[in-house]
Length: 550
Image (cartoon, rainbow, N blue to C red):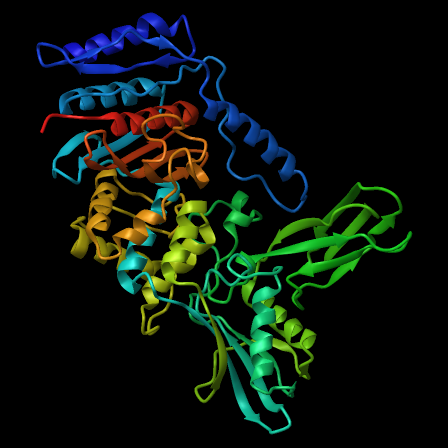
């Protein structure tokens, strides 16, 4: 208590004099309690400066497409908000005292849940309302990643299959339909393939041609029956739904269910070349975009009519780079099937029929398939870049299982997750609510204790290395690149972030100064998000600097 009182009084004495405070702990004093050095004035952390630059850049980018709504608001830096700095506690008691002060003094409103355990020694080092049910935001993806890896294993692959329902003649004529059957592959895009967004369908068309198909007398059928018909998870706010991070869910998805309207300069004063990427029959496209000679600028607007037609207007300079605008796909399955039809035509395969949706007939014969990357790579992309699309498809695939004999639904995914947490992790029923797999739903709830228990289980699971490798690293990669830089957590702490307008959270692992591996969860629900994030970063760096006697 004496150390904590000294720490708190020191901050109070200096908070009025400076906006940024450095708190650094010394080794234990003679009485065994940690002594705290006087605070040292420090400039604004580099991550704050970078965050402001990133925010301005994101705002400029957001104005390029009239079709996309705002993502959750970026964190605004309060002018007079003091940023807590990390300490280096030298006992478990000092660590708990410092974390308690940082958490308690950081925010003016809202709720916290927190827990820190030593996976090396097996003891709990800190808790604050560990049983409080809170919105997790994207830290929910940790649960999706764990249950998927446990269910399938790191090497598992999904498969987008192409089948024929009819006979194939020696001359290459398929008398019947060709079917593209979705398997819930979230990576059916050019994220893992070379080329533009047409790459996955072009590769499948190439495989079909390799099977000798030259003409299809019937239809192109899209089969999206592996998942439930509901495309928008419960609890997703309507303001999210025209943003790429909240694209609809389908087992037959392409390009993360976003279509790009790309404008390329034409020749002279002629019309510009405006195309959809990937090319698809799902959306009629009309363009009046013209080319302006000698200019490197451009002004193009893209709108979608109530009838589903895409209309592009404006101009683009003859020396301009291509200008691209994204639109969220409301109905992914016909979009994907229409892209497959266009890819077949581009490969020289004639299709006489139309594009429609239907389940695969029992007697259909498999022609070819495109496997996904291994699951560990999908989980890594999901966690490192916080991709909601990946999380939603994996969450439903978990319910289907390796035999693909159950419906991929959010309800079934939640049931399997709850069973996994109860039987494998030891989390009691009623602790969590998983309305989706990404954490975007306002109905989701977790506790700091359940999340930390999950981290403990994942650390010793057979797939532990894949789980650890999927997490961003403080000061180095993805969502944590600008956070905790030049602190003991830099290059050490690896964790999943969570950010919405009402949530700041972080859960993962850090190696303490004495070599202990710590699992931690910090969840804040409220509107004082900047102060909460600053406190979480200070607590993360403090965990990295922690050391105690053997």
